[in-house]
Amino acid sequence: MMRGLFFIALLFLQQPAQQPSRATEPTDPMPPPNMDYFIGKWAFDWNVPESLLGPGGKMKGTETYKKKPGASVYESDIEGESPSGPLKGRAVTSYNEADKMVTRVETGSFGASISKAGRIGGDLGGYYTIHWESVPIDRKGHSVKLRGKTQMLSPAHYKVQVEISVDGGPYTSFGIAWYRKAEVQTAR
Image 1: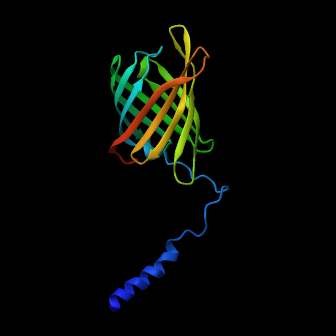
Image 2 (image 1 turned 45 degrees about the horizontal axis):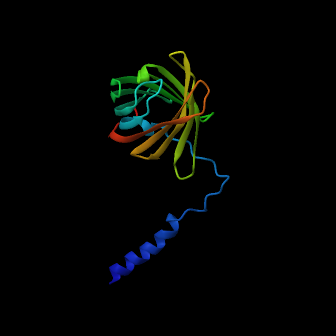
């Protein structure tokens, strides 16, 4: 009986220490994102529509991120299958914390080099979104631009919503790439 009372008293004494000291305020600064989130192997699938970038269909594969020592730069290898055959690419993603800017240069995907950049924002709950836009891609005499948002949804999932514009026309959906963590690697 005495032991039970001790545990109940301990529980009540512990509760105030576990309560936050105050509620969050709209003026509280956003905690900086931890871009090491991406380190490791991610499996993806993406249904893309037919476009100047290639035939429509399912893209499926993996992207494995590694951090370059001493920098906020991440290199990744992309492997898989696309509607036009085997997919093999590389990407370099960098983060500028002062400007809250993420840049990514991808080669091999869609048979072109794609450079995109955008700001990252988040909330106090730890959900982050990168709003990005690509530089124009010259394809068959046309100017193709991509834009979208990368949403870091949970420790094991993120998605990339993509839109496409041709020759300055309206943006239309280019599908959603869904990523799920396949293997965890530590930062080195």
